[in-house]
Length: 148
Image 1 (cartoon, helix red, strand yellow):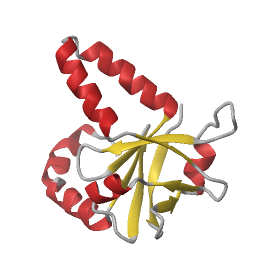
Image 2 (cartoon, one colour):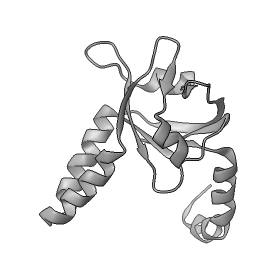
Image 3 (tube, helix red, strand yellow):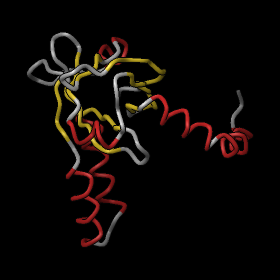
Image 4 (cartoon, one colour):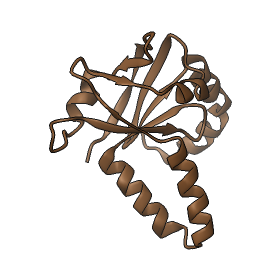
């Protein structure tokens, strides 16, 4: 299973594409057709969440197990799939970001591509800095659990 770590600064081109960092491309398994495929959707904050197709399936299966009420599960399932987009990495290492997700994440020319383990996040740099500053006190409290 892929594990993505690190922060990369990138540029969103006029066609709504970014170059996926080479490190992330190299970590991503190709499908049976030799393609690297990601599911892009809204993140829990103002970022775009990227999952490999395998991780996306695992997340959907996990949702099925965690939410036992059928009506609630359907609401969640519709919501996450409404914004989900199936995207291939092209031969130049670029991935297309749909316009509705660009708008949601307030992406402009400069973007930050952040590896957070099994997920990749795409942020507007200002939004990311604001988020990190807002959560700094919480991080300081939680950091006592870390042995770094």
